[in-house]
Length: 309
Ligand code: SF4
Image 1 (cartoon, rainbow, N blue to C red):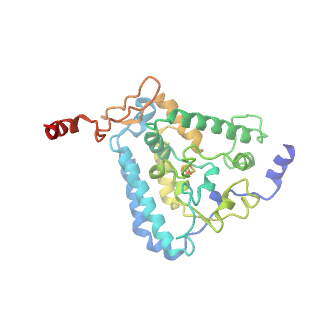
Image 2 (tube, rainbow, N blue to C red; image 1 turned 180 degrees about the horizontal axis):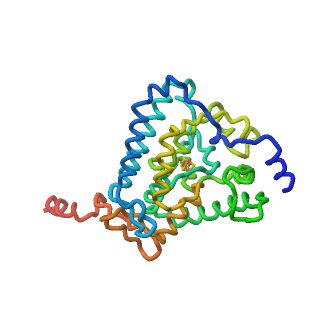
Image 3 (tube, helix red, strand yellow; image 1 turned 180 degrees about the vertical axis):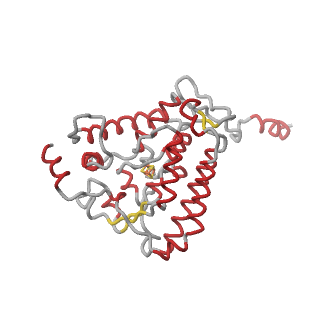
């Protein structure tokens, strides 16, 4: 353990593939100006929503919040798509949350904002197996915290710098455990929260052999060739300012971030102001929608009776 700490302090700093800094070429940045403007406009819409600072107390999001977040995600995807067209090698690259690139889903997404986490929680809470998913989020979140805290050398165990060696090395050790993100479907290897997945997953492209992105592979992380199409800095800062106004201090790691919203809502659905909350059964299950197209459904009975006559 001591050796690991010394290595993490004095050794060359190892970056996880999603931390790799890649520059978007000037031509691509120029071509993507309309998409960057759309990202900025979407952030402005969120920033202008009334009652953002009250979320922690009311446990309700402003009306239109989730539509605005989805518009931001769509604008960011359009930005990424424009860059992909102009950077050689990105078009066919594997991506997290797909059968080709799911190996990268062993690396827990970091720097997840509250805006992203709230949207993922809202989408995933109605899943029938959400209880199991939440347990897995808790198990993995706790494990990663232990991995980081075990390397922390400061006096106060709660004061761990996000940019410090303990966090970096702890993230690496946790990834090497080979645990998959609880939002990945283990059979199809597709992200179940694809439409709401974090920016850290949307930006990431694995170049070359995607199996090297599995942290148990000897080539990981140094030999993983990755390209990250990050959100432009100015827009990222604007998003962070919204975070501050919301007074929610979200955890930067996806597992802990989502659990925060489970705790805030006491396991209930995150609703917007004026919206009827989804009712769950006493065991926390979402209501199953009646399938009105099944052959025995009432709506077909009259027709059957008529034909019979
Ligand atoms: S959120 Fe989706 S794409 Fe991202 S790591 Fe989890 S499963 Fe993979």
